[in-house]
Image (cartoon, rainbow, N blue to C red):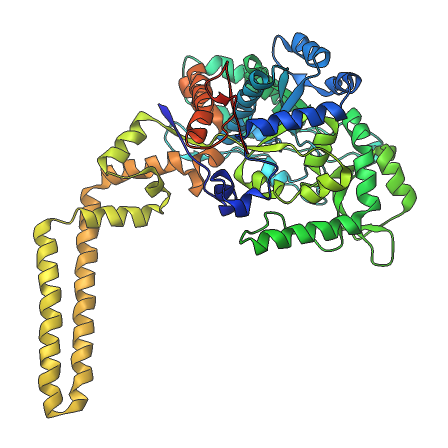
Amino acid sequence: MNIRTRTMTEPPLIQDWLERQSAAAGFFPAHPQDGEAYRELSRDVDRRFTREQRGELAQLLEGGGPHARSRVDRFIREDGFVVTTGQQPVLFGGPLFVLYKALTAVALAHRLEALLDRPVLPVFWVASEDHDWEEARQVSLLDQQNQLRSPALEEREGPAAALHRIGLETPLAEGAEENRVPPGNGLEKALKLLLDSLPDSDFAGEWTGMISDAWQPGTTLPAAFTQALARLLGDDGLFFIQSHASLLRTLSRPILARELQDSQELGAALVERAQALESAGFTPQVPILEGATNVFLDAPESRERILVDPDGGFRLRSSNRNLSASEINGALQGEDGKWISPNVLLRPVVEAHILPTLAYVAGPGEASYLAQTAPLFEAHEVHRPLVYPRFSGDVLEGKVQKVLEKFDLDLEALATPHHELASRIARDEVPPSIRKEVGSFRGMLARHTAQLQDAVSDLDPTLGPPVLQLKSQGFAQLDEVEKKVTQALKRENQIALAQLSKAQDHLFPGGLPQERGMSFWYYLFRYGPTFLEEIRREVASRPNRIGAAARGAITAKSDPGLSQSPGR
């Protein structure tokens, strides 16, 4: 087993930015390898955050491994910083890229700590206020027969509540009983399917216990997600914050209140930013909804986007219910179990307002929408962290590598639908003698029908079309012969093509890239701690590769991947 690193090439904005193209560079604070940019930002963060503030926010941190307390104490005492990443909580921890994000944040924190000679904590922001149940409720993996399985919680009907409000199998005992959110059902069935699908190995006992301990009836997706990852990555020293924490909401109140107060001006600024992206040839990742604020009302029964009412005041997008000024003010204070929470564009601003953040580790989609956020950072007078691309890669098992070599394919070829790829391979394997005779017959048919057409046209011009029809029919029959030859070769190579299909399932499960479509538990059960070590090794070596030919790479004397003479 080895992990092959990918370079982010989509969307075009991200590729151009990483390649230092000027049209894209202006939409980001700096290039992710610009060491001087981190130094400048650290000075700006120092001006904004006091030691007392760092001590307060430390109360939000969960996890961090066996040395968490001493690391937090040093973070406070020496005026430390953080590198963040984040993700909506997903059933059983989600796909591979969740680990890639987390371990990229850990590696970057180590490098920046060496660069700045100050403590830098990696922090995973668990988006527990998110309300996309459909995306969060399921995960996929291959079972022991190489069949794709998708353990999932049951679908939900009615208004979409925030994930932190949905108890698994049993309602959370919060607030009045009549206001309690119905539970998310199906955990026992999903857990059984997951564990039945995973391979048996020497590591199965430890991982099974880790999963079962976290995913218990009565918990929530955010709580179980955090518990399992904190335990899995304890040795990496990764900290977690759940976005619905009361203290976090209290600290974010000034940003949320200002957002409501100036919603129309801020909306116009975001529209202008989106237009600037389009003028530069890029597509904005997040459409700007006319008349919408950048906040939600997170109420016990649902989480809804707050819109500006044309007649004054605010209303909710889905239910179309008007919101009074007193209800808005109450939600800012957390009254009646209601809260105001940020949308995807405002969340980075809230995060940087609360945390002394130097960089956010982002996937390609996140990096794209972070390019849209500059007007909000400026309006709220919050420092804008650098964007750092997460690790991206493919796990290549030995059996998959053999298939690639057997058919002389590159990895991307396996993204082609199986029937198309199988036909292409079969055509490539047509014996030379058949290929020669088909080509010869095709040429002869074209030549003789052309000669016949000339001859009959001299006699009667109306005889030309029947000859053309004869030519078309001949070519069609020849195509049919070629198809039948291809089908015969497919039958002859059924075993090999079945291996090809399995390789495709491993690298593009369900048609998705592996890192988005495959649970990381599959590889942990199969390879144990070695798998985590392999990811750490690839992530640790990656900055060198990305910055090898780039001016101003991040380096430090204690780390060959960090530079002491960076430039913009």
